[in-house]
Length: 407
Image (cartoon, rainbow, N blue to C red; front, side, top):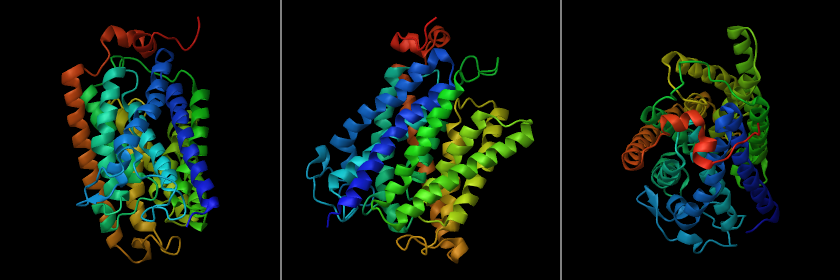
């Protein structure tokens, strides 16, 4: 039966998740050089439109439509056919089916936007659009069905992913790794230091991401209830613990904490708590956030030593955070927190950790392999990278004939 309070909560949460996309645009935009800021922001903003079209006419039905052998949804709901004001009890019994579909639309839109940070400052706009659309259809939609769709094979195995550690962060992290390898480093990478042009913009983006993340995680309860409250609390605790831990380690390691480190640690904590937000206690949320700050900081250090040009640390933060958080659900989940979930290793159920590990391996390999093949295909058909001269000029002028700042 429809509940007006639950419906209002889900609609507000959907709006908060949408706000994360311009938040991400500012977060990424501040970290690039000023000649690339508009091009970087545009790569996030345009996906609101591109992925929404895909979601309405194809993606929602493939992700959540009636199951076909645990692998994909049918096209029964293509074009939002039959998706209206009545609830769908398979997913949310107290909100309109259309409200649920639009809430999930925002998740679909932000996921490929996260990938763009890995290859910032060197990807042409046209090939980026082609890859993003194909990736959403061939990677995001199937994985979403496996994990969240009614009848999805990983869901049937008991995999827990409250708000997207697997569906969002692991898939984008694996795709980001493939994109860096397929695209190659920026031509200036390793020759001289490449520094962010506007850290206040990045911090503003971090704040918007953190704010929107409450809708991302708490909204995934799909009801204004105790599980949503727990997810809300876990989200904040994970984010603050990630930020604090990153700053402490950076202070010890480099001698001074930085604002960029604070922003990175916060996002690492938020990403890592996402799969367990509605399944773990507040104490575990703090512990997960602290582990996120430490592990993701280490991952970024490894990237630097390998001279691996993941421009904005998508692999080290979202990919590693998604893996870490997904595995920690298998340790920390408790039915005392969410009776609809499962107990983890700490509650006497080691099998849950095995299920989570299987999901990490399967989804990680699948997302990387398909992303690599798509990138190779797009590169062969259209090319991926800016020409050297265009890269020197920057994305803003070469791809959009605009400049963010006047002389």
